[in-house]
Image (cartoon, rainbow, N blue to C red; front, top):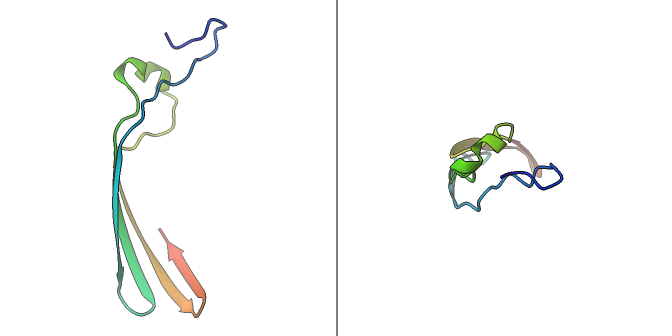
Length: 81
């Protein structure tokens, strides 16, 4: 089912997925900008392939992000996310 004739794994069997993302950025002062974002992902793993994907990387469905940038001096900025 998930193996080739030589015994190797034929693949994880992931499906293509839809992703919807949005973000906003707001300038608080001349030197400080803050940003936030949201992303929704479908699950790429069909139920029939779940056992083959136990050790796969983390699958996210909802992701919220925040960050900011501070202008230290002209042409020098520090960012964090």
